[in-house]
Image (cartoon, rainbow, N blue to C red; front, side):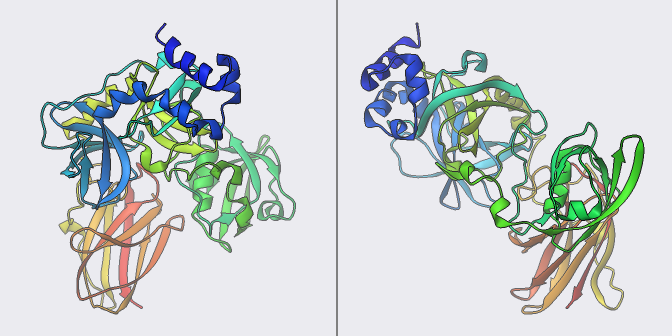
Length: 461
């Protein structure tokens, strides 16, 4: 009976039966004042434990108060590296309260914040199994109106390859191979080869399974896409392919991706999509039109109970929430400090050893014992301090046969100035120092969880 009253009110407003209501619900109805008003009571209590998260004074996400002494969970990837994080409580005050990031879970894209507070209203959880397909849900904001409303479109499900958008957004300058792909278990199975493309010229055929790229194992189609996306037109790649019982080696010279092929324009209708919008271990899917900066807050049922934490605007008709029971299971680790995000310390073992031409010429090994940073969530990092002269241009090159290099240059305070990670096993960055001083050259990997040995050099151009 708990779902009767709001559905009854909405039925009266729109003059529809409940099934017809779900089928006829569209963007115009979502913005209908009478429809939204029917949800005022639904979000009245949840908005008390909803906060606005700001980074350097800019709205980046909502947050959900999980404990009365100032523990708040939110979406991690919308918070820029080294930003000053504050939150606005829904208590009538316009002042923002300083917050510390205590932990980040990279796979779920959740961050735990802590503020100095007491006696705060806290979230009321409900298992996501209660949020069955077709049930109304509301995304909570700070106002008396919900931030958005919709219905559950797919019940809780675990990550299946190809079922969500990739973690890494496609670069508009990305390279192009010209194949359709699906998971090959293991490998990337070619489902089609487009005529006249680099794939066709290289001799790839439908049903080929690509299991290695430039000596790097390819576990599935997403891994192959992520590797191809960070290459550039003109790069030549070596592919190892299983064709029936035979293993063959092919070379392909990549072309340039047609801008018209960068995703389906239909997916961007209705709202801007989240930068991190896929690859979550579990999701609850709903059809709410949610802004990226409105993720991180509670998704509630018609009783006002939280069935999930909104995590991404994923497509034209898709928004994702992390199911409530999964969020609750992560809270102890997020609070414990195990998942703490720290500024990268300088590793004294891999500091400059000049060879007469290089300002930095070093070898190092990235391990799982190394620190992670907000800038490269889920990646391990080594930092090299390099003195540079203002106005001078430097070539920074990182190489590895064990990981895909990614280089970031930071100032002395850890603020990002430049980054590059465009090539498999080699990354090259051109950087002009803005002033005299010591800069932090951060060696990392493109993909999360990668470790291995590397070399890095910094030379004047």
